[in-house]
Image (cartoon, rainbow, N blue to C red; front, side, top):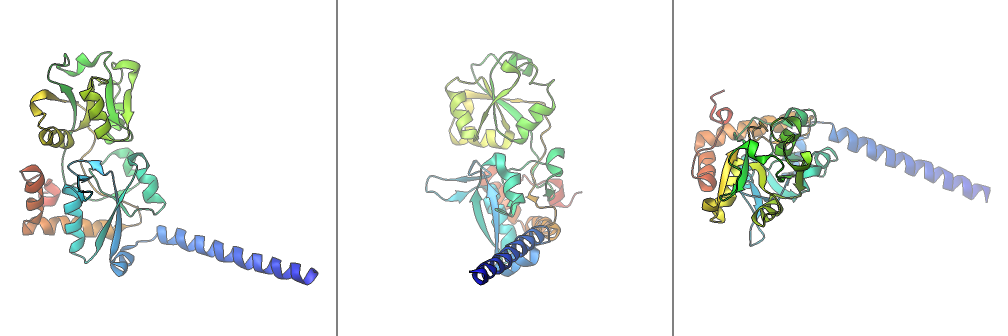
Length: 281
């Protein structure tokens, strides 16, 4: 019996050692530059909110489409790497990146000082701004008209961060001094349409595309929110320096060849490339 206990104890120690070694290896890999792994496996996992039109979303046929989808696929095609698109809860994006569930955040992801502490950003590839969407017959004509009115915003969005960080603009005057937070912009638009909120704080790119696609442009007004929320870039782990470098090089190459412009025209009917992508910085 004593001999059996010794054997069991020895096996337990060996097993624990293997588990610790595996965890150490995983931790080490997560903190290493993984470019060679992506190239070897010919795959990279990108996390995105699959309701964020027109950047990345699931269409009626169940296919992932959008400007960011096309752009990312084109960038990684340059390196023979296939993109696996992973829908995520947007409020958990940095946690998903940190724990290795995804390798990149790429879906209208705005650059902010707070996010710079958590991720390594690529060059900005598109400039944008935050706006308020209100119904055409709304009494809200300017920001001060939002006094005691109900505001909606997506949880953990750059717009909501800007709202929180600049309380003198809107937070101090809206009802309950906060915004109703939604998991997706689609849910927020439904509440705006049904008068459950008075205005929606949203990115201008999303606002214009959504209203145009629903043929609702004439029924709503878009007002500047006077909030700086950051322009769009790709977020990677701090250790993935080579990956970010390759993405930046991919942007410039696609623009030089005209592919970036083709994708932009497809989704926005204009060239939306940032100065960094055009090589003007």
